[in-house]
Image (cartoon, rainbow, N blue to C red):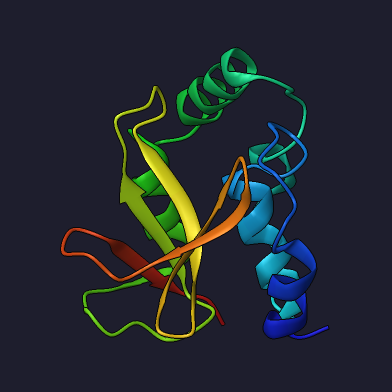
Length: 133
């Protein structure tokens, strides 16, 4: 499968904790590119926001990282740019309880999962990007 085929398949799949949340969406995009996925424990074993928060706190507590952004920095190479490469991981600050949402760079913009399926947006100052090899 290619990134384009994955994005087409996921276009209308709504957000769901532990099924199609931001981290499982990113893992699927990485898999479609033939790359290693995010650690499975990041996107499995919970089914609601409380479970997602609990899981993040458990994982951060077990690691030497203060938050998931530090964990991403440890696993992948962060790129400081307004012109990220398609297929890169993107994180954007949000006001929700987790503080960030994750997605992938696609067609020069950022793609995130939402209640309506994938939403695409332009790159914004403050977005964080990681390349995966």
